[in-house]
Length: 393
Image 1: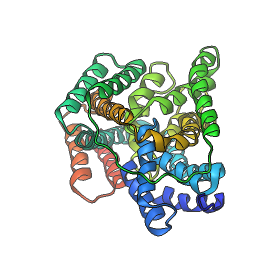
Image 2: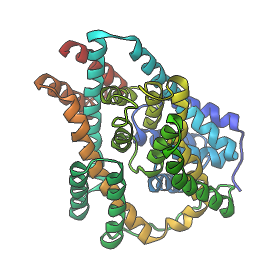
Image 3: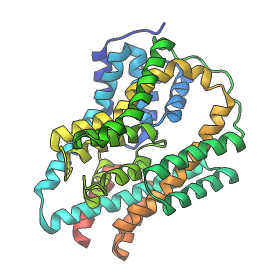
Image 4: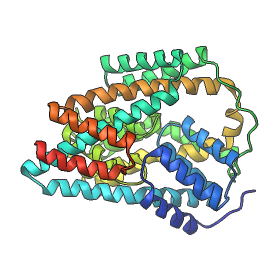
């Protein structure tokens, strides 16, 4: 049995990480390993690698799910909730403040800052496309799969195509790709039975099926919860990939303006913690429906709700599943499709909306270069882009 601790202990540790963990999900995983494997020895490297692999297999925010899994191992379900709260609430509150502050600004200064944040998003997503492409499409079959996914997403943008591309990637990976055998794994130590895990997974799939039906005849709040729940349920690849799915669900229906949406995505790069806390900004900045703190709470609950069911649901079964070669092959195909979706999202709506002339292209290129070749923190680059946006606007 695992060594159990208290939820308060978990919250305090993750609150510090939530205030200081800049750099995106890969950096977060490094922070977690240093804190919980090296310093605190809650688990060893093999068990940590197994937990990271589970988070990569599940849809939703991977670094948040690793944190939730660590909290679950340490202090049960209260520990899972404490880990999420400590790691997520600092960035969520900061982005809510950004949304309120943006509504107070008017005129050219507000437009310039918004445009600068959009240019920062161009640089950040460009870096993500390149890094993920190197890691997830290293050979010709996966590169071809990623290119096909990008073409499909560009020809038919929208949430249904995103889902279809991911499913097709998994099926193609299952049929074509040949994963390397994983070797022996040390089981994760978590005090959850398979029966409890099965009930959690059943509730997840029930909500995924029933929520769209309820939202069709419900009010704006239920519709928002459904949009974010589906985004948290169906997106593989992290916060960058959730962008087109949310944009397709929110902007055409008038919940939020596209410029405001993309500006918040740029602002999300300047705060520590998970990028999925961008949901709090969207909820606070809505044009229609519940907004402010209520809107932020609804969107956050929808975005992270699936992970609260998937993490405790999947952990009891993951040790066995991670050894199955077909599951590993399907995940390779899904990851290659993720790269294609991200490349398509980089072009439309990010580049097509943000780049209006040579000066914009230059700022975006400098942002990408600073992210890739300097040690400047992401938040500093985003702030510089905001200032540059005022100048060029």
